[in-house]
Amino acid sequence: TVLVSILAGKTIADLTRRIPTSRAVVRAMPNLPASIGAGATGAYANAAVSEAGRAGAHALLAANGIVEWLPSEDLIDAVTAVSGSGPAYV
Image (cartoon, rainbow, N blue to C red):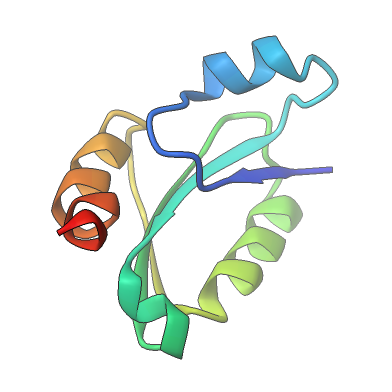
């Protein structure tokens, strides 16, 4: 099972500490146009996510638009600020 999280500011370490049965985790941040299928989602998968798990997460997230896989979890915070909850808040 892969846990896919769109919780802003909650790291994979936070999630696995609070849900210890979840080892395979994908953090994702969609943007507002996702609500009409024209969005973009930044995503990061930890090392416990298999290729099949990543493909499943990709298919789920791609329903909202394009998916860009990030090389580092730290970049999710930038995606959140630039295109995720920042613009949605404004």
